[in-house]
Amino acid sequence: MVILRSILTCCVLSTHVFVTSSQATNLPPAPSGGMFTVDTRVVINSTAAAAYQALIDFPNYASWNPFVRAAIVISPLNLTLPDQRPVEGKDLYLRVQIPPLPFPVNKNTPDDPLATQLSYEKITAVQPKLGRLAWKFQPDTPGVFQAERWQAVSDLGNGCVLYESREVFIGAAAVVLRETMGANLQKGFDAQGLGLKMLLEDGSK
Image (cartoon, rainbow, N blue to C red):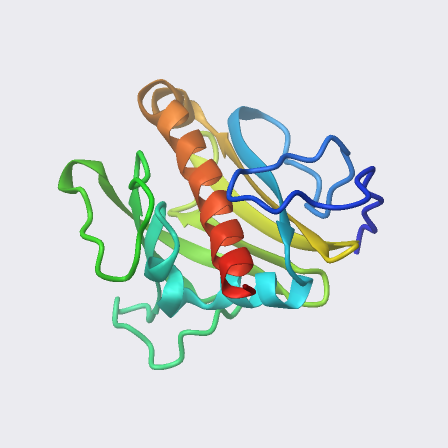
């Protein structure tokens, strides 16, 4: 695991996203050839274990996440599996809001039909010791469209963790996605980071 040496001596207790100025990262190297990248970095007053547990707890995403409203582990026949823990190689169905819903959100917050997007993904990395989770868009079509989203949490010390997320979009179709949804995808990544921060910090009070 990349050991992050934050220049911060403490975190600010607030509901605002606080982006670290350190460039150290726990994400793997980004792939080359990307047409555009969406990413976010948020410092949270919590533990790495609690943050990682929130990321892999797919059934509870709707209770705090204004961007990814549903993440469901499915079978190759598109059936919901009884075990919803992420496992490398399993299929994942996502229902997202682009742009994200406004805060606050909970499990009963309705989607905006005009902002709802569906996608099928493949879980590519579940690395609890490294604090990493990743999934890749399906079908993976080199030259046309490829995208893999990584998320990572790292212990900064002083009761703080760093949450990072990055997705690099590759291929001809990525250019169209950038022009039509790029800005709102960035809002979605930022909103998920803020939602995670609110979940963990408010839950600790």
